[in-house]
Length: 252
Image (cartoon, rainbow, N blue to C red; front, side, top):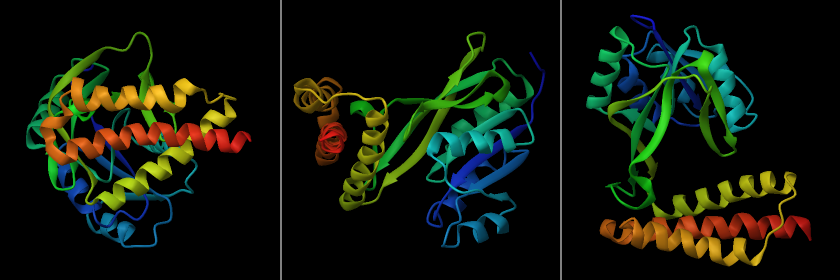
């Protein structure tokens, strides 16, 4: 295992002027390179990123997984921190990464993501601890999964460790934004399922969404987050229903 490492932080963007400065400021201390892969934003995202010293690559969006893998492979260093523009590192997480850089103990690192929904941090339901692998040696894994829900898939021999601190995620600022996000993501998921020739059954359309709601709201204590917890659980259930009913519509 290496005694010290350099880290390339990779961020994919499209019209993220609302978030990008906060994100870049949080990774400055731990990054030896900051690479922003932008899908031809029409706002000030690229301008802000350049002003803050990030290297910019303009690249046509080809899917969440594909875009992130392009960024990872374009990085200068093998250890990569891959985060989204609407995320930032907590102070405790920054300290954990700084300490780890000088005394490497793993090939990849898992961390907790803390999500902010309509102005409040959500600490129950299926949203916390929202465990993610975001810092890893790219020789030991890459982005995989199914769009838009990507995940880092490691090689079998990769050593995995846990970092203290949270990755702070600013999800949506108002309910309308959440509804739009559910609609967009369910359409992407429906296309993936269509390509796999999955058939929508009674289980997919009714039982699976109901189970998701009860799991998130009751079993995982989502009700402790008040009306936001209910909205999140209902949205998760509705998103499942939408992905399968849209797929059924495509197949008809």
